[in-house]
Length: 245
Image (cartoon, rainbow, N blue to C red):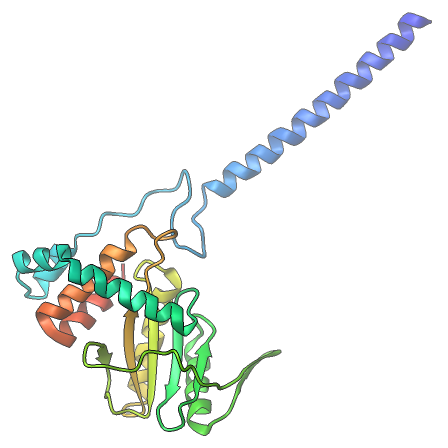
């Protein structure tokens, strides 16, 4: 009788151990599967995913007619790195926390709307129409109110601008060239300008997220050098190319 009880206890212990082991293996397998996927928010590959191809900024600069030697010197220059840091800090002071950080400013009233990420073309147009009309924008249950951002650094001659600088609405984008959402919104902003010529201008400012995108800062420096050597058009051509990678 005692032996039978002991046998039953041993069987119960073994069953419990097998169940626990199966649960652990299943959990571990699930974790590994998640690690092998690309992170949708950062656009960077997690462990086990294929690493992104190396980007040749010098080759791109050369394709735009820029002098390779001068370009390399510019990229290595401390002033270029300081410019990226300056734009990044300016975004932080203005309240930008992630990318794309888009602020739509009505220069006539001083009111601004903070665009909630990479919205689609129709929503971006709605924001522009409402900013011009002095209205808040409602998206579902969320209302984005117009307000004044005193800390936003004003447009200057140092900025790279697409569109007419004298436009009533200035759209400041604090962005990261490796951010997938920034890439997604890039053609959306281009369409906004095409559909609203003379009403809005697009200002691109650097905001690399180093923890998520280790190569973004070097791309920011390269884009600024393209602009320094080739002017406004070269900057935007370089940025357009990066957005398509």
